[in-house]
Image (cartoon, rainbow, N blue to C red; front, top):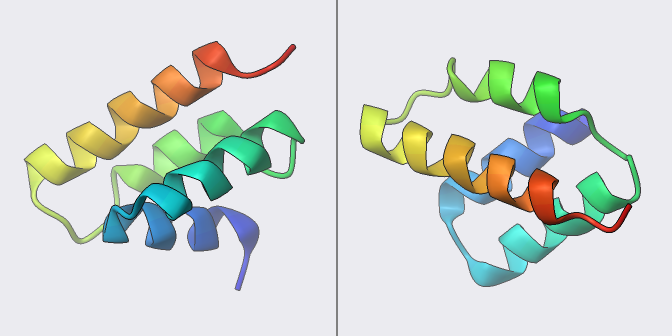
Length: 66
């Protein structure tokens, strides 16, 4: 499975450990925030769930270690 798809699949599950996984992937530049956000819009989830994932990803990105 491709890393962006893996991260999004894990985030759809909503477990704390999956958010930590996403944080580490972003921090270590294993995935691209732009691609994650683009693919998030195509996820087969309700609008509120997609919006929550996208907002949380933006928050993780803004707080990553530089």
